[in-house]
Length: 104
Image (cartoon, rainbow, N blue to C red; front, side, top):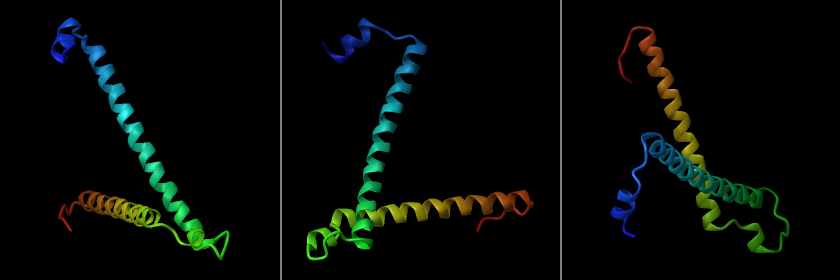
C-alpha cells in the first residue's frame, strides 16, 4: 500500500495527529538522549583509563581510544558552550532588567 493510499484510507483526527506527532517527537528525543548517554559513557571510559588503569603493562587498557578521547573532548566542549550561552543569556537579561538594553 502506498503512502497516499494509507493516508486516504484513514484520515486521523486532529487529536490523533497531534498524539502521533507527539509520540514520534518523544521517540526521536529518546533516541537522541540514548546517543548522548553513549557519548558520556565513552568519555567516562576515557577518564577512567587515564586516572586508574587496571593493568599497567597492558597498553590497550591504559591508553584511551581515539573514539573515547573524541567523546571526552566533545562533551567538554558542549558543556563549556552551554555554560557560556547560559552566562550570556543571564548577562543580557540583567542588562535589559537594568534598562541598559545594549548588546555585548
